[in-house]
Image (tube, rainbow, N blue to C red; front, side, top):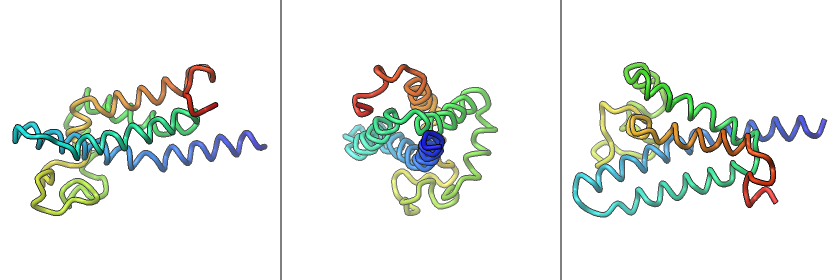
Length: 151
């Protein structure tokens, strides 16, 4: 009974981490795009990527959480790779897609693209496929190779 509860809790934690990973990866991709377009530094992009990395490291210590977060991200990455129009349609149905694409963006912000649903840049660049595959593979590895946090 206890192991089932741990697995269910892990799956719920992974699903809860899905939205922050999705939106933070997109924010990182957009901030890096702005830095690239202006030929300037993009410290916000680095901060967002560091936040994604921290969440991913925590998830790799708990296989059900890594699978619950990694499988949807990998599926989104595959959808962006195979059918961009369908992926954009799915991303356009997500929350905050009408308000500039990110939960914290105001219209007119450099990363707020009105016609660009959340996840477009990170999905089209393969970031979701990479993060999702990393999480799924970490969950499938033997326990001794999984994470330094799993003890």
